[in-house]
Image 1 (cartoon, one colour):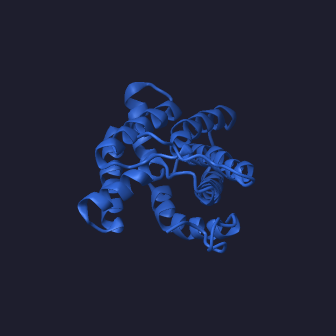
Image 2 (spheres, one colour; image 1 turned 60 degrees about the horizontal axis):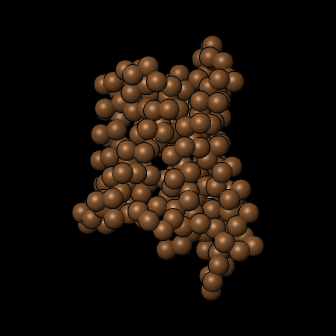
Length: 213
């Protein structure tokens, strides 16, 4: 896993701002979903379940799980970028920081509002950090690596991973609920929208591209 991809040239500052701003917002959005108490996104269910069993904070668990997943990149020969390694640490720290600042939410109306804010902010965060093009998160890289290794479709690989993650997290005590369903339905369209909003000019002959192919 040598040779991290890092930004260079005049676009480096802007790309780094997109990366780290997106990762901080991603951690904050995950924390809002925790406070809403109506169900978490798939990996959040696992993180919360492990946190319940170990007594560690959910942010620390997120960092630990991310590090373990990153180690799984070695046998499938995935190459990390600056965004990959940053993802492991920044999201967990931002999540714990937000949880320390935001109190528990009481009342269904407030819970729904906080959940909607968390899901919407997660979509914006996803668009920001992916637009930086500095490497996928460890979990996304696992998905694409297994897709390449097995020849199975990305949709099938992602579904298999997330079903396993959700079931494991739920059995450990993670929160599975309406928020999980809302996230699954909304995150794709939200991420696509915010990828367009935050798109940076691509280097080379295709300046209009959102992501490298």
